[in-house]
Image 1 (tube, helix red, strand yellow):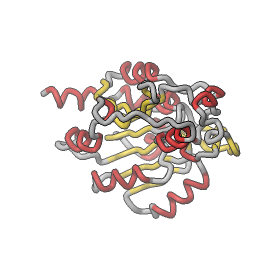
Image 2 (cartoon, one colour; image 1 turned 90 degrees about the vertical axis):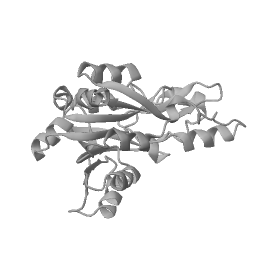
Image 3 (cartoon, rainbow, N blue to C red; image 1 turned 135 degrees about the vertical axis):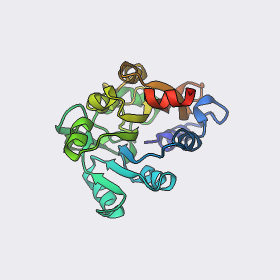
Length: 252
């Protein structure tokens, strides 16, 4: 999810705008880097965790047309839209479920601004950013939850070449549920959206993502798609981590 539209709308009503990060490190060209990182061995399996409207899946199909893509979306209504967009038997498999530490069920919060939907409740602190109304929870639904270790084991998937995580603060659960895959170095690269502002109660912090991936030997490669507030403070960005194998291939 990209909160840029949400924040821009809220700030515009107060006469502010987001400062440009065009020349900053977090605005590198992600597409170009992915093409280069996977030039020798294009991804065969891509997991899109937090698929929302399927825009990322469509982008991955364009970049890596031979890849099998698994799109996970817990919002039942949105998952139905994805199923219509990506029919069974095609390159994209839609899984109507959240991804977490273990299989089961969980409460999913459907907010006024759909791209902020999350397994986590909205933090009271968002009122300070002027976006409380847009992130107000309108409905709660119980959704199925899968772990990536379990999902892959059940389907005989040995490797995930590229894992994208966009789960609004619930990244820690996704990574915990992929501990086996990560320990085996079976995930080539991990792209995770990280929030530095407090949008959700109990949201995953950047150092927690780094610690979980670092313990399995993954290394931070770079930052992308950053957004800052009017004072220049980073609000959120995408962080790309590489497996030991992929990182070593760049050095050799």
